[in-house]
Length: 174
Ligand code: HEC
Image 1 (cartoon, rainbow, N blue to C red):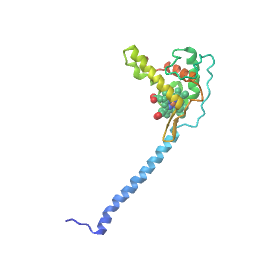
Image 2: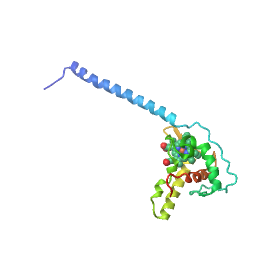
Image 3: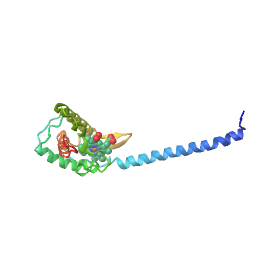
Image 4: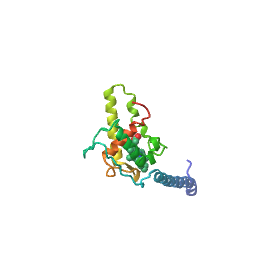
């Protein structure tokens, strides 16, 4: 039998305890770095800007589930300016993402390959709803604001105008 004396046991356990302390320290360091990165990435403190939607049809209080302003030139114009004021600092000028937030030109990419027109339309409509939900509520996780909510800042007319603008910037034509 290969029994260890009490001293030897302590001696052998020591490196393992040290390794435990190092990995605990690394875990803390990783957590701190992750939080720091999240704080840099999450520009939650920038002030959203109101959007002037004069000239666009009014949509009322009920939230639409599909973009009523698709290919509406006046809406695209309003949407371009609203995007530049409220979204570009994270999602990039002309919707070309610099990497800190998703590239919104790709929003409808998953619909491109669909051959059937009805299915394609349903896919775009689904993305409209996803878009609106994201813009209304923003994105927060674990106490960090990755994207601020825009509900209460501007109305759905402005949100759909931004989507109409983004549809002119699509990565791939539908
Ligand atoms: C402070 C930075 C910031 C601002 C300002 C911002 N976003 Fe975002 N947005 C993000 C980040 C970061 C994500 C990804 C969040 C996540 O990982 O959950 C995101 C996600 C999204 C998504 C989902 C994209 C996807 O592919 O899943 C949409 C749509 C979106 N934003 C639209 C907008 C619009 C429209 C505006 C302007 C009205 C806007 N965002 C303003 C940072 C921002």
